[in-house]
Image (tube, rainbow, N blue to C red; front, side, top):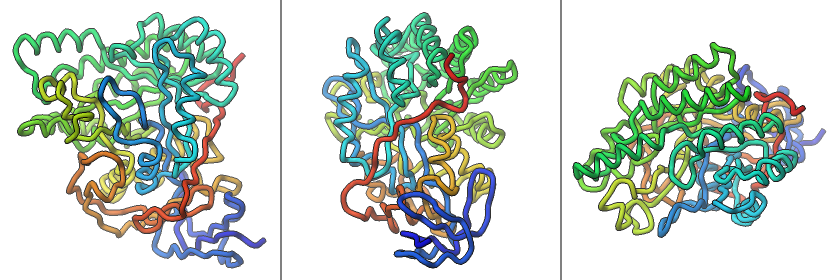
Length: 470
């Protein structure tokens, strides 16, 4: 067989194996894994490099409505460009249903935003904010059959959060259709009470975002979400866990026999609440929910990654410009932390941070890195084995990593729409130096190459965590 591309002399890494092999690529898929493959139109020398499946970031916000006068910093063009720079070949973004809107209409809007603009492959999670009888009884079952097999619900944010009975109804629909539900766990009533207390005391600076969203508010909501899932007997994903207490709720639920997936993010490994307590408004750069906690919480999140409590390492990329009246420094946000847009950029830095801080510092091995950043995402969200592994027949989504390359993070190298990175100046060891999406080179060195965006929308199967619908 003559190949379109052969990657030679690299060390192939999957979630379970590490071996030296050439990789032959034909028609966008991996066609051979063997020694001394030579017959190809293009040969890439990967001597000294790791050959990994491209990263899959399953928690990314792009071009999403964010309130009056607030504009998200990344659309699908800039967001997927940044994802590619950071070694990702697929992102799963959110399609936000607005109140009174049908899911079909929301999807039309988001597909139009993404069409022809994506530098990596994309898929959508459905965000359910208005679970009417028609949405749950008609629309959602039909959309699950069409390949929209995951959805998200919020327990916080007015306008987004669902009541417990609405969550139960949504979970029950997921159980009957074979969909997988992601849950943002924070107790909105407790948060609103604490905001009121802070307002009475004049505590309105960015640092008070963290003290109005304490660990207990996340822990309680996590326990409640797990209890609701147990009542309906359906798996769920607890997203962006920030601390030991919430993590232990996941561990205990598994010990009870529940099927649960857990996720954490770079901000909970690298940042603390002290980052919100900077001079002037600089702390606004680090406002996200749940907020960063403290050093013991960082240690707990590392423990969760090492011990398997967390299945997923995602970015929760939710970018806003800092020095911008439509971003963090909007007029109301300057006066009160509750109006500072929640979210930080991170789709490009997710993989390098975990590689450098995890693999290169001996906290996790490289197989665990692949599982946490690619394979588990593909399995959990119905994309495996088409994506998330290096295997014959899989899409040729491949990232070549140089473990010796040292980089100091600066905002301009990340090519996102935000005007800052929370990780400015962080020294990184190990970097993705080449990225292919379905056999097409998208990034070489640290630059986007290849012309027009090549990313395609990916319909998905059902999660490996859920039972088939009856």
